[in-house]
Image (cartoon, rainbow, N blue to C red; front, side, top):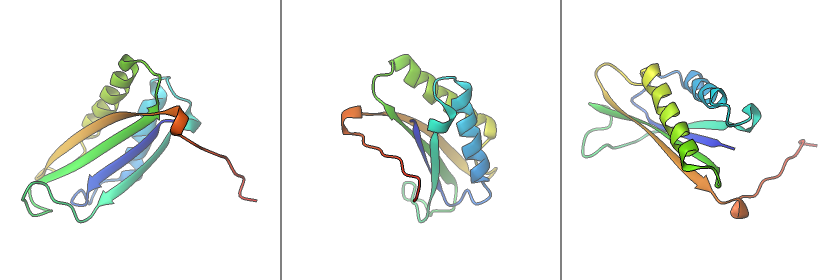
Length: 123
């Protein structure tokens, strides 16, 4: 834990997504809250997408990060994680010059009693 899921609008076509994912993971590692091997990050391109009633590739874009972690952490830790990730996105200057891009980070808890996992070696 945590699981990080990114959704971004397809008009961010020049975005180097693997690099952004790396920078998000680096941010989480630097917080010294999570073990590096526990951070699992993935991204999904939203295509098609619609913001309001605008045509999809006109003036607006989005880059949304959802962080899921097991419940039990103090609220201050969740705030720290959310703010640090948002700052990272701002520093990376996600977006295009001609497009207003909304950056969001949402931190959610997973109840450990209803979270299940297993490990396999692929044998």
